[in-house]
Amino acid sequence: MKLLLPTKKFILSSFSVLIAVAVLLTVVPVVYAESSDPLTPIPGLGKVNNNTLIRMHKSEGTWFNDQETLLKQADALGVTFQSLIDAEAKQNKNVSILQAGLAAFQSEVAICREIHLVAGASVFSTVGFKVNGDVRERFAAGQSLISGHDSLKEAHLRLSIALTELSRSYANWRHSRIH
Image 1 (cartoon, rainbow, N blue to C red):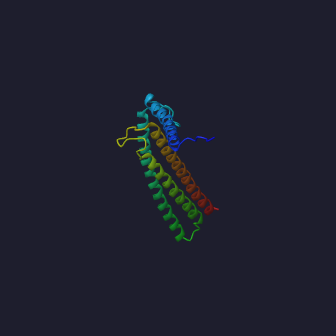
Image 2 (image 1 turned 30 degrees about the vertical axis):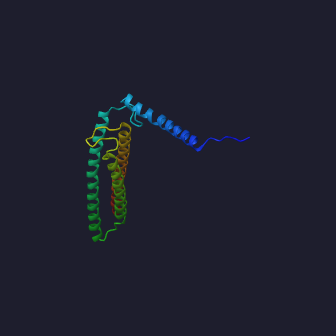
Image 3 (image 1 turned 90 degrees about the vertical axis):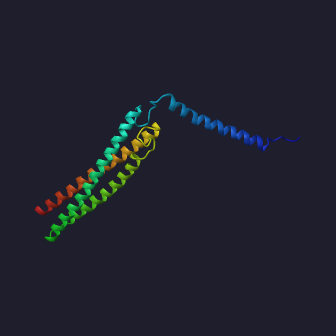
């Protein structure tokens, strides 16, 4: 007895229908959910409206610009600290603690600048936002805001620690000179 196997045409059409159904089941609920409730929760932000997302986006842009100014001031502080090291070295004083502190500071500022640039890419991208600043896609906008905020926060924290460590190295240097 001969066994009848399905033809390639039947298998191909069945497979095509399965793919179409799978795409429909994954895409349609997302589109429906997005259009049915404008305040769908955004993971990490909750239910925020579009105006709040726009304000958050502008606020992160301001934070980015302020942090850019701080990084420029940190660079200027590094130059001033280097001139202090040069002046003290001319007087034949041991400046190894100052040099180590400055090297660590400059390294940390460079890392902060890289994190800051990552934040800028996230904050000033148009992912989730239209060019005019309005929200295009809530979920993508929310994720962009969270990513930018996290990077700005990390750069801020690292810069604060770097400033503290530079100050500590200066205090240690002064203490070593006194004793």
